[in-house]
Length: 319
Image (cartoon, rainbow, N blue to C red; front, side, top):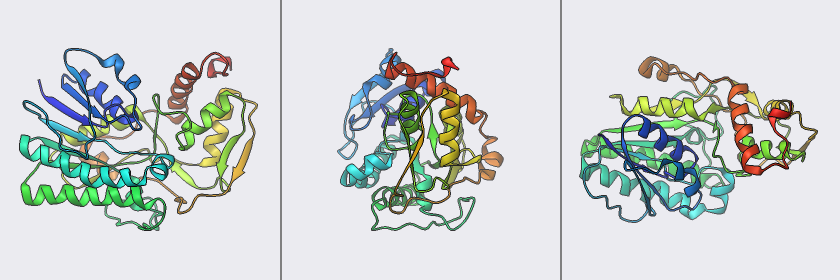
């Protein structure tokens, strides 16, 4: 059986990846310091092929025995998280990536870095191709996340070129689905609880800024295909279907049949105006493109949030 280590394995994406790998026949070690992750995301995975280690990857990583694959997902990932945890965000992007790559070198393991569309910053190119170098404010409040991921990419390529580590880099665009934390600062996990409770949906700015939302099952499938490929440069994985924030808010209200209204708040500093992946490379290289329509993915996500929030919330089943 192949043996995989998933850093950030108790987080939203990490837990879905652990579940996927177990179904693919891997032995899985999930490593997380539980700063933003939770054991509730992985407790259903307990088996003889699954192990959880509570550990901060900015410290030396020790794993006994062979490791075939390292999936480096550890990092605060929402604007609210990295605004509140700026130093740790920088440390996990730099020191944590260094420690994980060092383990990959020691174990002769394949390594995948979970990078982000945020490396493009507030882009001047649309849609964003992997060849675009980005438009990032390194000293702005979002710079701690953007530059940590950009450094992580540079370090990953250095280990590949200098130490011949088998590395992969995925640039993840906006992803949603079950196990997101309510009110984590991102649009969908903020809007759904608000709509379920009949509260106003808080839209920043005029709501015309765009995002491209990919359902988590599609994303994990693409990431797995990338790890199993022979390609070492960054690859965008995301849904090219672009929507405004106002459109996604209106769709969530409609699916839930919520009485919620929309209120506007000031746009955060350096908030990207557009975000849309060019996925030609993923299509050609991996034979991958997203399969879940936004409506189907949102209904699954709404049902999950309704169950988590309890019987007092409205649900999509009340349509």
